[in-house]
Image (cartoon, rainbow, N blue to C red; front, side, top):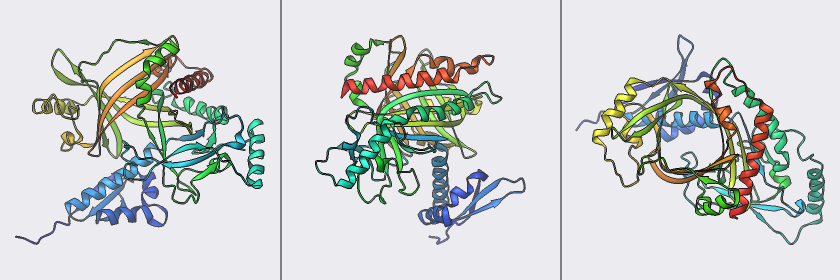
Length: 446
């Protein structure tokens, strides 16, 4: 048996503007990647000005190094242009009595980036004793809240309170203008509000897991306290009480469009280190999955997370854009060739998995909607979907619940009418209105 060890080199392009982030402060990030993979890694600039990552080591070391670099790039691309984490305080009778704690989360985590990290959620607590100093601080804070002066300014990634919603929306309004598809680069705009639970990781530098509103407003994401967030979309409590919600808000169920468990399938992959996706739909007449849409340049422009601090679900508002991409004949052939060797029924309800595409392109995950129900009244639509996903080789099943304003259809379809232009102020009004509707739903089930 030969003792020869393959230590060949492999190279691939990386975005030039992401090199400093990949290396990290004093080389900390790239050092971790080298240690985890065992590979040697070099960054060089090619003759055409593009940057190349070169890895040297065994095939498994090179593969792991490339995977870790891509994961770092993905984390950079999913960070929104702006993001706020708002603690809900609107219903508090006396803000000076509000104290909270980070409680360890022991449920399943479907997010591949935080799956192996210790996670916490926020819970409000009642304290019976406070020092006079704490009372003075909270009394001052209560006065600030009443006068709308809690924060002198808002910055990207701020932890703030729900009384600052209007200021946050002003910033979101500017991002809607930037996302306007009537600008030269046509884009599809997507707005949505999701129910779930906001989780927090990397809080090891916070000395006390108990905090008040004043402390909360001093937290920063990925900075002094190294706080990171991970939103879990699972909201089974809403699906369980959907009949109560229907009756309360006059929501009518729309006919089911999914045949069996054959909902849409979304396949995520990277191309030139950028994330893309394509969608498949079931053609009942042909008995086959067909490629119906391809998308590139997926970008999150704004996120606002609303933390309830209670048993009520948390909320996430998301504004993103994506560009339609031509459907590649090669992709169509891959889908056609895969289907005869796949089983129509699998143990986890998924027709395709990440490994099915591994030899064709750099697949990073597959999601399949196995059930979807829609409920609407004259202003809003509530969607309940059961989604199975295979991300980074890990299977999970979540119950997604989202709310959309029916007026958003005009915004989301404006790329099909390039002569139109939407009113940003009107869109902001509908966002505020829809957030309030989502809050009412959360209140009904609590």
